[in-house]
Amino acid sequence: MDFYEVLKKRRSFRGFDPDKAISKDSLQRIMQAVQCAPSACNRQPWRFEIVFNSKLRSRIGACYPKPWLLEAPAIVVAMADYSSCWNRLEGTPAAEIDLGIAMEHLVLAAAAENLGTCWICAFEKAKMNQVMQVQAPWSVEAITPLGYANQPPRELQYKALDAIFKVTE
Image 1 (cartoon, helix red, strand yellow):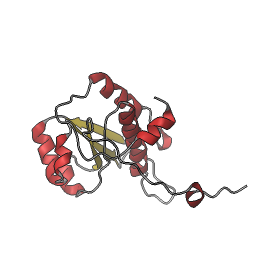
Image 2 (tube, helix red, strand yellow):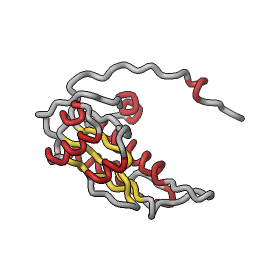
Image 3 (cartoon, one colour):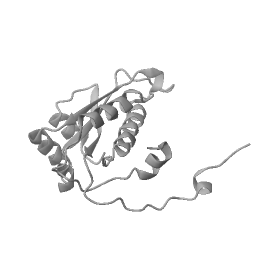
Image 4 (cartoon, helix red, strand yellow):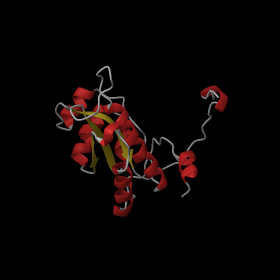
């Protein structure tokens, strides 16, 4: 699939076909897409867990109680390592930026595989860290369901280019 088609195809889905399995080949390509994501000083301060286990998925679902999350056959949990990331000049960590880039690689690769995702950060991090048994310096920063959408994507309205870009020559 053409890169620009993937960009236009990528949507947040809130409904999944729980009976349609994700192929191992698709998972492998998605993992390779994340593997090649850039990060500050190439530190790659991230870890992703692809959760198929129904008991763990239910515990994750308790942190984000929308029923459609558990429809997907998998939930991807994205974690950042605040001890190994690069820090900005004023000392603040860049882990969330690096993880965001890697997560975007994941959702774009999923779209290229005709899989649906929905980037979720609306949860209490302490509770999610407890569910995932994650301890500092690691932290769960985002999750996404991963599976085949059960409805077509909705059309989106985008701001005009001149509303989001200023070209200075």
